[in-house]
Length: 169
Length: 391
Image (cartoon, rainbow over all chains, first blue to last red):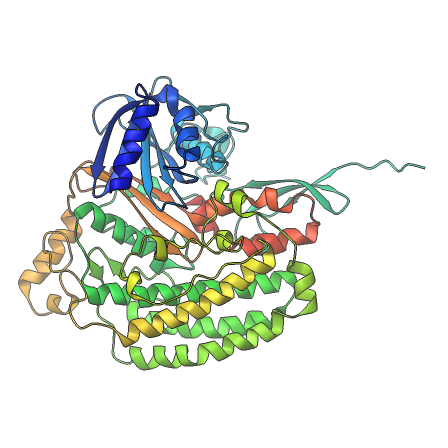
């Protein structure tokens, strides 16, 4: 727990305008970050000796529209430090109308596929990603299925009817 | 004289026995050397994360079986732990030990299937049959306990579905007493086998730094010499009370990952033994009526239990608003569940962090510059399951 508090303080001292707020729930520290700072914050957290978040466990998108009524997406980063054995959750809000955020591949290479998945599922565009293509859904797929306004049953164009066995074929 | 050469693109999979499922690889070859390899995934995408948003917390458990279908217990456990964290409850000690026994048997079973198919890919057929013989016994044990052989759905929020049945102890003890010798037999077939060494040593090498940066976990990262195991670093479900070692490799090649998994099976065998020796008495599911299911035996005896069961299964439970991330050491690596709750009976968002998905990402880095025949060796050594990659 003391580790967690120092992480928040350190980050605030380094980039005071980047940190929006922090919260601890069930022993997990979450820090909300301003979207323009994500690359710098990621680099700092990875390289600083006292935070040493050298491992990106997970990266995913969340559609906030039915949670707080806003039309925002959230990109959530789960960080882990091999050396210090602590975790941190970073969250960045981005508007659903213009879902763009900088990539963190330059810090953690593992972010490549995670970001492609977030693009596939939510349509979040990661600036600077070398190969931002759909990863789980097929080519020619229409829409982003994990958005809350996407129906559970799916909604597919005629070109993919054969793939989904909806047509005569 | 110069001979004009050109790079050839060939398609490996999605229906290919050594891609371990429906993985498709686009390989660019210069002669027999791999120049570029692009994995194409998603053939098994069933939208499990989307489905989760339309199910109650209890209803999602059977879907977790379908992630890594070779290790359903670990998937169940990771999910149950995440929901328990969200609810701020703890499973009773006995159920924690049962969970450990089941998860370690699962690890052995998953590693056995990996060893069988990995050896088969490289051409050692005998091992395949031996491993399936052992796995059969584990499946029988699972059938005794959970009623199914593959998709077990045995672990519940707050405990497990039912207590260990009669005859379980004898059957499992028989297995763990003989398994060590059996494992020795397999090792004599492979570990010092010259062909095996030539096919696996120095192939698919990844350094410790790269392994961390690429987010590898489980035996894949330990093969590169990083001593990191979630069971040790963030113990869950009473793993801190078990005495076991975390084996690591040195070179980060296919051979070291093979050695690590073999040793892990031995350690798992010992964990099962310890957990069975020290299995505490008590309840197998927490007595928290508003979130946990009633005991199975009570259902047949008492009307109130039946109503209780009905209410929870049909109405669901409403955890507090918040978000949690819980992870377990699945046979393939760090399996994490990130749950966002809006306080309603359906999870607002569930993100699964599948270890195979992240481990597969590194494939291209491992095989570029190697021969086409090494591709199957490297895929085998990553131990991927497409069920959890595609979700």
